[in-house]
Image 1 (tube, rainbow, N blue to C red):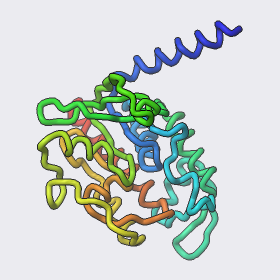
Image 2 (tube, one colour; image 1 turned 90 degrees about the vertical axis):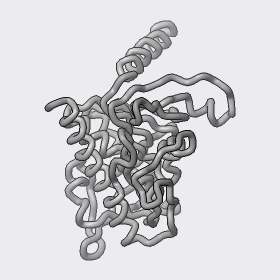
Image 3 (cartoon, helix red, strand yellow; image 1 turned 30 degrees about the vertical axis):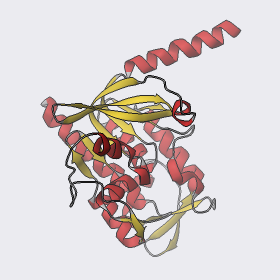
Image 4 (tube, rainbow, N blue to C red; image 1 turned 120 degrees about the vertical axis):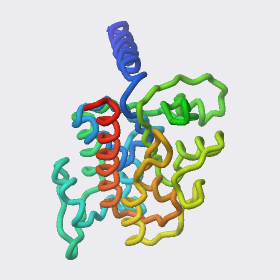
Length: 260
């Protein structure tokens, strides 16, 4: 039995990893915008691999606010909750509350069942840059980075990369830091996150969801951090709508590229 258990895990994991060394979309960061993007892109028939640094995907949605595990979602995003079967209750006009643990678990389950492959405990340490475009990500185990060990990485090739790493906008940051490139922002660089303003933050999260550099898209809080806009705290409608928007943008780009 011991042999079966170990061989089964190693054989199946190696198969899964090999099947995702070349993908249509590599999503970095498993928060709400990344998970929703993964779901919609996989539903559209794209080969999607999502890489999350932590043991459990979900980002900050798990904890609600200060570990009060409830979140607020506005009217505009309720159709997304319905689509992934997340229950909610009205609170005030135009605003709803739901259990953050149920919501996060539902997003993970929905992305996986749609066909996306999720890898946890992965860190991204670099991007692949070819002919002026992002063409993949360089990955390593998260514990390797945490312990400061020098271990060579592997490469995931991708037609498109999505940075949904939240406040740190890690993929865009490494691209900008290591290469003399101009991003699609007002300054051409990473402008940095501003202080909390919920209404503005929710609006600009969706506005800033875009292709920030050829082959590289940003969503969720990473979109605002790159473009110099506000954070919004534990309201998650903008995150969900950002994920849905970026999935549409990437799907359109890939469909045109592949002649579909």
